[in-house]
Image (cartoon, rainbow, N blue to C red; front, top):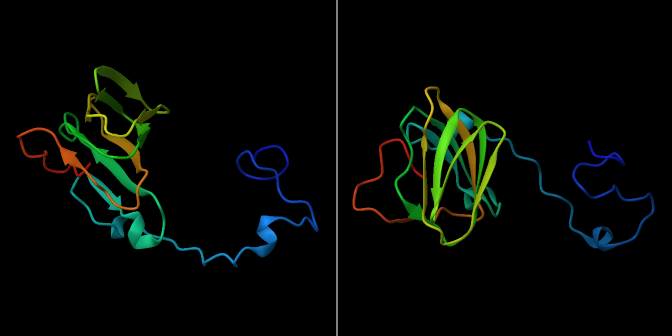
Length: 149
């Protein structure tokens, strides 16, 4: 937890504090979704935000060495959190190998791809800043089996 007892950068509200939250609607109930209940492409599970009333969509990647999506782009930013393994990312004219603990941010409309460049499974969470996946594939080859990026 951050200093002040709250999560993130915002301090908790003081008792009796009046502000925008005072007029807010009660929060919706928390939901729990099991990863193994999400649609799967073999190497990834997908959470479509619109199906859960949230404004982001997530891909939980578990890719074998050499696997990853072909060149594509989205009209929104995409954030990749590498949890385990190594990945070679290509975004625009840049190429970079990343490992566990590194975060890649790809701007909107930037052609990009990645593949597991290591010898162990690549585990990452890909955050699409959109309630639905909207992907434009940029290669003639079909996307590799098991990649739904």
